[in-house]
Length: 90
Image (cartoon, rainbow, N blue to C red; front, side, top):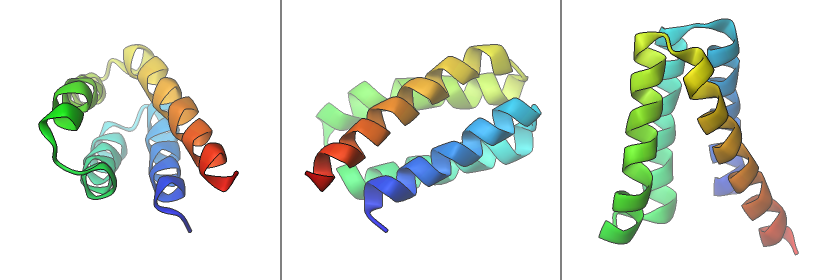
């Protein structure tokens, strides 16, 4: 499995957790995603400053039970990573 596909799989768990309104499962999956994301894309300031605020906001929404606010972020991240996965296959 490609690294990007692993990120997509983890985000799908986040999506399931948001749909189930399961903050524990969602928070844990976002934390795993964050570690995986950093492993794939690195720790450069450029990556961190663009991505970390979004992921922190997602974690905060899930932790506080704001699932309607979390869901669009999850969908956007899934769309972006699925697109990147398809591009890497070409």
